[in-house]
Amino acid sequence: MLYGQGNATPHVMRINIISVKPLINMKLPKKIYLQIRCEKETDLNGLIVQLKVRAGRKNPYYIFFPKTDINGEAALTQDDFIGQFDDHFETGLMDYDGSIEIAEPEIEVSLFDSTLMMKNKKLAMAWPLLKNEKSKWSSRKEQYSYMVSCANSRFKMKPFFFNVEEYDSITVDVETK
Image (tube, rainbow, N blue to C red; front, top):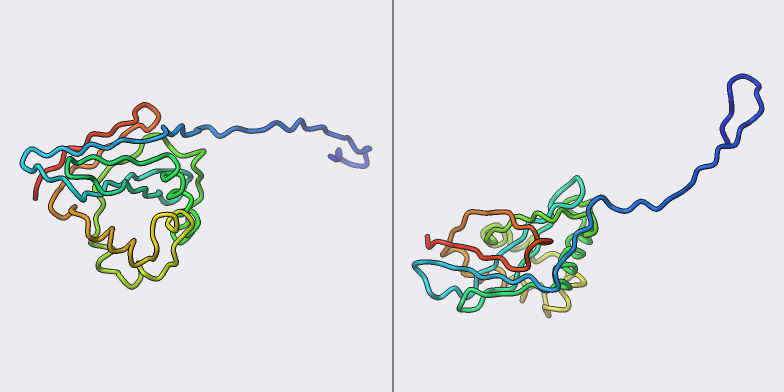
């Protein structure tokens, strides 16, 4: 109820409530395919590519492809993308406030850098496995070993942006260090 000025009688204001849809609604493909290429190297096994996803006002989310095969190929399913996103949000340590529904479709693609994880092993091992991680790993130690054993330290690449709504394949050119 809204009241007018002075001793006027109360006025009733009716508000029509409508549902508000997000301004952005990320449309993920069923799978995102990855192809890594390198002029000077034929064995591209064991590389991990990360996707930096922005959603909300705070810190970005990092989503990881599985390791590449010898040909530099890997695929990330929609379910795994969403699961990793949800796990990231569940940790809450870095103050996330966005959801997958409002995530920006422009995603930064780069090589995962395992040096921070290796330098902070105790911290990396402190968390229990999260919901999505439990479907892939039997322990935090297994997950940690998988991540730090990647072949990324042998390569470098320039990060770039990719629109996940327009394409379902990413081609990454890397160079040997």
